Length: 445
Image (cartoon, rainbow, N blue to C red):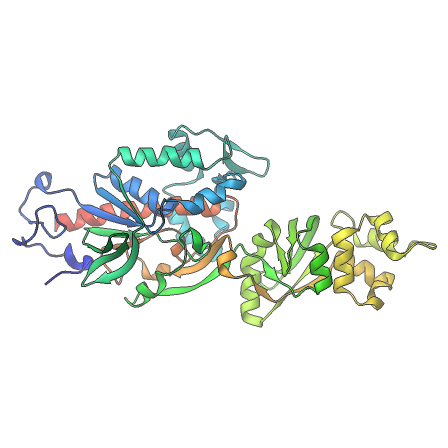
């Protein structure tokens, strides 16, 4: 009878029918030096999976990486097209707090591979880095491809083997099952690390197809949700047609934080055909998304003149304008034109727009209703996934001994700025180390 992956290593007696190179061939009395090298399957070739593979290879394990796509790290490469943001240089305490409710759990990963060590690791690949004015850390050439090439070369030199177009299908009689170009294939490694990503950018491999495979095995998975995402507002056809794609480069957003208090953040975002997106919106997306889920919608307040006080705005709006229209007056006195003027027209009634007091108040706090987040496949990342409560200290699934998880498929989230990638690296390293500890314990039994 075949034995499931998640119990094969608890069998201490020799299986005389097994191939000596197979995962089931172990003998308690065999010296460790004579036992074949353990084989570990890493399923998912993103940053977390590749870092897990590197950690395992350094520990003397034979590592095979399986990925459904024709090549590894496709999302990593796409993210690098706009400038490869590797990590962030802010103080450790502030850095960890970026992970919100899951900061304590993510801190355990990052303790073993913090931003300083990430930079050292990149330098070890022959890639220089620099710190930008925002504190973000980038490769010297701002590109992802050279870093990935150097990394893959080192992995192959260490003996890591890659198997492309191998889509994981779950388990069949306890064995890992893959759909491959040559048909279905079963695998019985000594352990497996799942690093399958979340559910954003499905065309690059992160499609969330693993969720039912794990829930069917009694693994507790939080629903996957969009993170670092845009929102729909329900623009009129006129406004959408005229301003879709227009940037707001000097603006602030007031919003309700997780504690229910009004908070404020300044930055930039873009008007889309259906709503808003961009760096400032992404930074606030987690609490806004949760509010929409709880209430059906949420409201933010746009400050269209963040460099001026309400008193200054009121003085300028109420200043006599002679024969000029209000639109011309706002452009002349406050620089409000284009999409900002369009937003005032879109969100205010004609009566409010012509009332100087109400108009001044709206310029400093224009209410905008967010109706829904954009679909998860459009999001930069996803929230939800395997709950930390379903994982032990080694990163192993409590319900499936011998199966470990890493990366974005675990239930955490973070804003952009290097936080996502750092945690993926660190979680892969932690999972690889966890597998090595677990294999050592099993062999010593």
